[in-house]
Length: 104
Image (cartoon, rainbow, N blue to C red; front, top):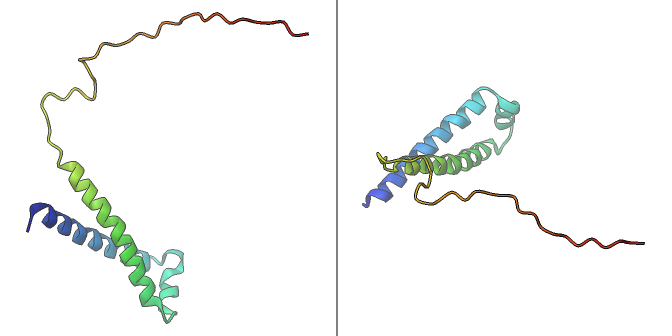
């Protein structure tokens, strides 16, 4: 299996694990009376599954993005985004003549 695919699958599993912990905390701390709504409804399990999958997709994407952005190489010659090879153009104010006509 290619390394990128393995990395993606690993990050997706981590994202869904974080989502499971998040949904578990939502239910444990009874945010917005969610525990009562889930336990006293016949489709409560479906609601928890949809909440877990939806958050899992978001957390997996964020987890993968953080990992990919963290893979950037560190250069010793980092100039902090400054372009030293281009000259700096000074903005000198210039007077622009404007014709004014009198209105009556």
